Picture (tube, rainbow, N blue to C red):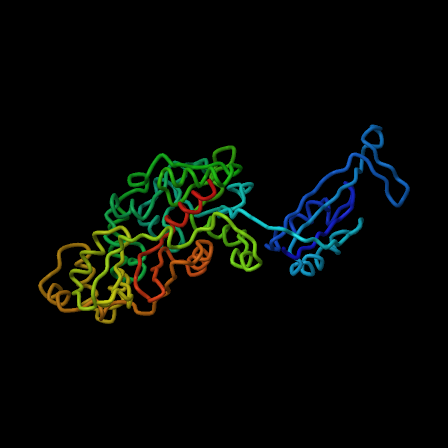
Length: 422
């Protein structure tokens, strides 16, 4: 048996808190507490009040101001927290507290509330670019943005395409990913921008733009993103004009904002169904290398997989470091000649001196050993919170013995969370 309380509020349709019906204000308050509470609002068909006023649905002229009953069930330990905020909300009504003996409490977890619309989640008024702008301008805008895609709009402000990092590399001739470009020396960066300036955005953009209206449900937008394998969607108003952008990061921020502490629920003996852990979504095809693997082989592995990093493990499979192309850049950066050689290697075959250096430098020398990792039993909501707060696109996963098990990514988190919701 579980020790619970019931809070009842008797009020009426006319009662308001800051212009909002009391029932709506109470629902918002209880939901935002993120506690294990259920709330039900019912409207009576007739009633009378302390003032002597009578309300009855049977007499049309008196059918206004019908009685409202709000019933909240919650664990006893959460009662004082709930009551502390309820009393100021109820300026007209009665608050009652009951003891309850609950046999069981079962709940379904959801990825995000189904009532949310795209407007509730999107980033409003995003950066945009005209189709006749030089590609270099798009690259500069993306370098200063947290997004890797930029909406392209016509003269009326309607999206006609999107220019992405992939478009810059594949169609525009950019030799490096934006993260590496940002780390490069100004001279190297400006030389690459000069090459990009000879093309217009409309020549390399992905079109037509796949967009979503701001009043559509978030679930519908996520379905489009997953079906079409998109990282972001331009958001339009009813006139087709760009008003926002919806990215995976926006969705994860919403999950962080809306999700309660499921571990705390389980600690209160509440049975929560549909919870998924990192183990359910990790990618096990991430490449690993030993510490003495030479960097020329590491570069081949990074270039040949979409995760764009490798894990460095010892003979027991224990994770000791990770290498991405940014780690290579940081390793060579103190040496101007080595850095220029590395950039040359990334854009064309390595020269003799660089080939010799890449063939003698080991993974242990280059790897990043200061790692943020997660364990297999972490809830995906907690993984989302960590990746969003740290602005990470991927995270290595280890077991209890610190052995490397795989990687999780934003895409795998979104697919699993949406799949659970569906």
